[in-house]
Length: 464
Image (cartoon, rainbow, N blue to C red; front, side, top):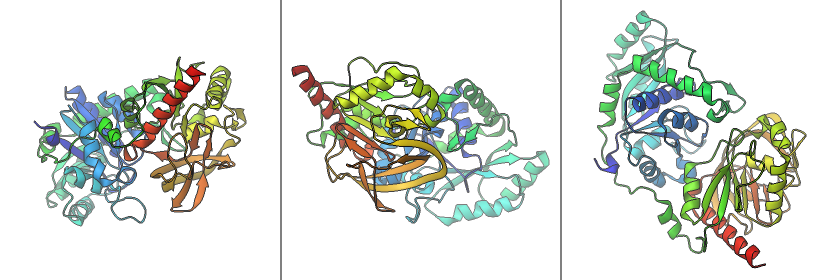
């Protein structure tokens, strides 16, 4: 079978809260336990669900976001991530047709399904309806003829009689029922201020939850029918995304030698798009992970640092207590080495978080608030820095309940241009720190520039 014809399904829902993550993760685990190599994907910028997907499949959970990366990169990124898989499952975001605010279908599950030429299985919360489920499904099936709504999984079914009524109603819809799951809270995943608790923070419990989800899906879903449906897809004409090829078209960004780039991980820093490390390696870096909660020093020979997203606010006392690492991070930043920090990384580089001392790299204090900051952004680099050349335009995403005071330094990281105009973040020496999450696959020069900067700094320090 050619790579372009990888069997695939999109798991969608009429709205948030219907059970997409429950069903998608359960399906991934059930098919993986059956011996299939399953490639997990998530529509949108969310980085928590892919952690559960990865746990279920043993492969990196990958995001497909048409706003951040552009519609033209969706199929190539999918093919790259799904290479060698027997089956690819794509969990949607929000409701099937919900996309970026005010931009039509852009970044919606429906748009991604069309770009992947993949059939959609709709997860319906049936807890408060019977015959009405057929009207709901009919509406979703007929709204956009280009979206192939090929099956339904009924979730939160109350009883055998309830399931009988639902299936009877669905007979007139023309859309087959491929599963029915009973109401069951045993396999729930706990939530807090920004959604589900990440896998890295509750790994033992998460393993049990995923196993229970797999058991529920095996019992309630027709896995053979779902796999048969996934195999009806056409071949995609696109070539798989390739980090080395992406970087080859960006002049002057590859490194003359292989510097070591340290990437923060562990329970406090759970978010990084898988393609970022791949781009760093393709640009000529060696990549080493470290855990700021556990490791008292950066990996030996570190010449650049990437600190992505996560929940440092949940671990502020422990991060603060690791004074040797905070000192090492501050020293690396003071040396001029490139440091890229996004959201959680921004907080870690500040003077303090909720009153607990952090790395002190940035002249700012950070704290938790009740206010949620959420949404897509468009931004431009205002000056040359270790991550981006002046004038570089990116699309990003903000998602936090913290505030930094001040919110921008004398040299801001970005000038936001949409949906509001303001400056944000910090550029100082080799440091680029911002609340904005950016997907480097959309702008590979960011990775190349970071690696080249690390390599130049390493050469300069060795010859000094």
